[in-house]
Length: 352
Ligand code: SF4
Ligand code: SF4
Image (cartoon, rainbow, N blue to C red):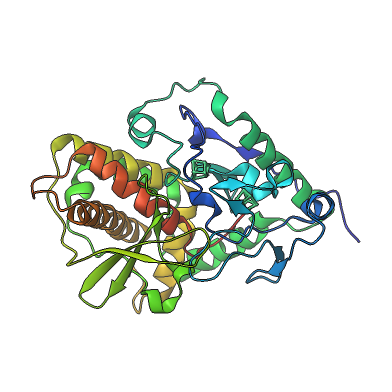
């Protein structure tokens, strides 16, 4: 028998200070196969009766995307043909919600409709109102959260708590707030420190797995590894052509002081995302000898820093610009090229 559902409110603290204007020439968030909530189906089929549907990896209904890294079938000339009835997950973007110890909203910083530098360098006041440019997106996220649990006894906090209890028993759990307090003063150092970047997929793994970024071209740029080199590819919405922009040997360039400060702010944003703790727990449980949460968090933040610097350096190399330290605008581009990819990783909890 279904109950009244858990009382989950949406924590939107990590949205404070954001300004957002969707770029009509972008379409980056449409290079996907968006999931359909049960309530999305009828309006979509009324508007577009022959709209094909597919199944996502979890068996849920989704709007199909075109092959070879193409966009959702409803994207036409970078515009959504079903804008009025687009799925909730599209209406909510660039807000992402992680369901774990709470329902926590954060921003997908890959979206070029957000000014990454302005947002990360801003210190929001504790009473700063919810961002005026994201009202509809937040309303959608709240409505989706309510609908998800209204007729269900499922509570994501139960599974999270059970795993945390097991990790406490195994002796490697440290509370996030304790780790956050110890790492916050060290973020500028961690932004500059060497780190092991996360593995980049190859185009043979499937174009849909490649990290994407928008840099003003007609299609997004995808990064693909081919052994010791990286290929930068421009994808097309139709999925009919993939243009090679360049092949480079990945190498991390140094940064200016301002760029290092921006990267430290990005690490600070990650430190506050609940997503991070589930990912750390997942990686620690796979370590042959489990390390502490504090050490795992340091390792992970250094890897995130390496990912951002490597992708920023690759974008510089693809434009054949002279070498020299990366500036803050280039690190912002590296953050945009990494964030969605990093958020897509598995961890404890799930995305709404
Ligand atoms: S990625 Fe952001 S700016 Fe681009 S279309 Fe989506 S919401 Fe708009
Ligand atoms: S339904 Fe529309 S907004 Fe959503 S991914 Fe497809 S084209 Fe983009």
